[in-house]
Amino acid sequence: MLKFMILKAVLPLAIAGTSMTPMNTATGDEPVTTLGITSSDVTLELPAEEEALWNGLSTEQQARSLEILNDEDFLTPDFDLAANPEVKVSFEEGGDPVAAPGDLGALATRTKYVSQDWTIFGIAYTRIYTRMTFTTSGASVTSIQNCWNTHVNYVPFRAIDSSSYSGRTGANAPSGWCKTDWALTTPLQATKFGTQGLLCNGYGTIVTRWNV
Image (cartoon, rainbow, N blue to C red; front, side):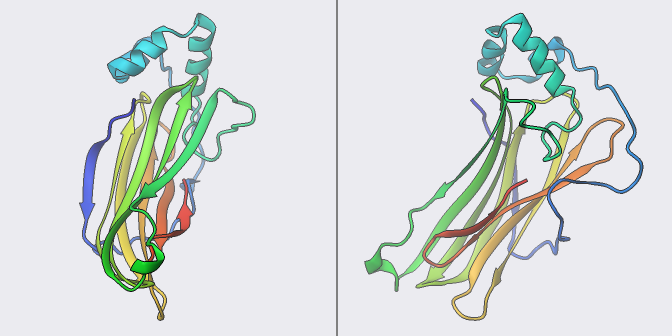
C-alpha cells in the first residue's frame, strides 16, 4: 500500500506559477540512455508490503516489470498504455461531501483532493496527490485556506519535485482552484513536466480536474 511522504504546504497565491501543458519534454535534443534498473534496485525501493508482492511475481512478470521501469517514458503521457496492458493508471477524487440543498446558504469550510496512481501487475509504484481546503458561502468560494501536494515514488532512478499554488476565478459566485506543477527527472534525460489540479465551486463540487 502506498504511504504518503514529502508534504508541501503552500499559502494561497504564494507562487505565481507558469502555465504548463501536461508532461511536455523540455526543449532540446533527446539523449538516449539505458537506465539499467535491476531487480535489486526495485526491491531496495519498495516498502515491505509491495516487496512481498514483487517476490510473488513469476520470473516472466518480474522481467516484464523491469522492461517497463526501464522505459524512459514510464510515468508520462508519452508512455504507450495500449502496448503495456500490465500498467494501470488510476484516478481518484474525494473529500468533504457536496453541500445538501438545505445547506447551500451556509458558511462552510471544505476540503477536496485529486490523486493519480501507477501500478504494474498490481504493485503500486507512484502516486501524486493535490488537496485544497477552502471556505464557501452558498455557491461562492470566498477564500483558499491551503493548497498542497504530496507524493510517493518507488521507481528507481526517478526523482519527482513539485510546487503548488491556488486562486479563485469568476466574478459572480467565484470558484476556487489548486494546481501542482510536477517535474520528473531521469538520468541523462530532459526533465518532463505535468500539472495536476482541481477546480471547485462553493457547493464542494469538483467542476474540473487536471491530470498529468
